[in-house]
Image (cartoon, rainbow, N blue to C red; front, top):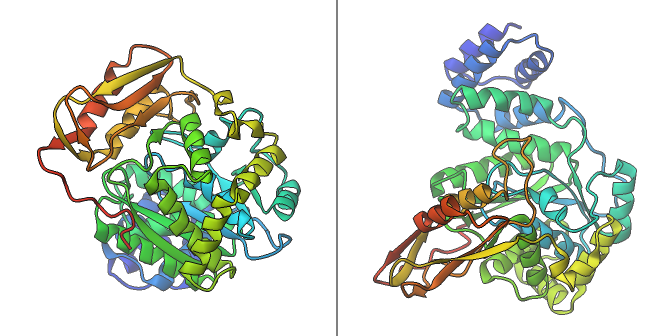
Length: 430
């Protein structure tokens, strides 16, 4: 088998066999296939696409290129959740204890953030004492005991994906549905879950800007999951404005606690219920959306989900008293209000600009090595559809300095106003 023949085959729109795809990934990982040939092959994929079978074969070859987690010692059906990313996306912090409270084991491996705010691991580390690095055996024991544990990604997961992504970034082949879908799913499959729920974001703050691209990606990932023997479901949700009100690590932890108390923002609460229902159903704990929703709503109203959250924090070394005393979380020295420049209704909030404003404050990383400030960020006071008066507070910046000109500018650029009330964009698209 020669790589040049496989490049030519894909260039001509022909279908590769499982063995040919395995040959490509094995050869690339072993440095037997050079970057220039891999680049040429990925560009051929970019233009010619891949069948569902080809994409599934690529995903499995990438998943098997490194470590794979064995979660078989955890009792029950393990369900993982993945979001394609957004601004103010705090869902894992709520879903992990909420779904665990419904009797579904949540054994989650999460990453750190790169971009506007931290990842799930960064947010959890805003809780004093919380540890995310655990040996696999202790991780499994925590899930069996408490039904939930969230740890940082350790080990060599899908190294082929890491190597390919670095190449895609500099060869203009990032926006290929088969390559995106296999990249995401290879890591989820290597992480060992029995079932996977995907939250595919669409809108200005998402990787997928339009519904057709989001639908295509969601469909491709569900098809991969089903083909490789994982129960898989996807939800397409709106990211044309930030989710919830808080953007920033400790601020998002506070919002997660409020949501588990039943006092969180309506959109964050609803999305967690929708995703949670899918997780509960895939785990076989409910037969219908309504049955699953009732289970989850009862876990919130009874306080059980909040109790599971406290146990989860304590088990991983965290100070669970932050649930009752959120002032113990990292804080910012300055709270500076941003006021509306006009009367009217909030018509748009560019989520990506809000994310950039938070990153400029230090809530996110511009590079992988950057150190983030867990206490900074911003809290929105007005979302799309809200009526505002000129001079009314639309957001509050939480900063360690009073020099916030650039962040304030980004927030004001993000907001657009109109004289008539806009149509409310549905949170759940499909």
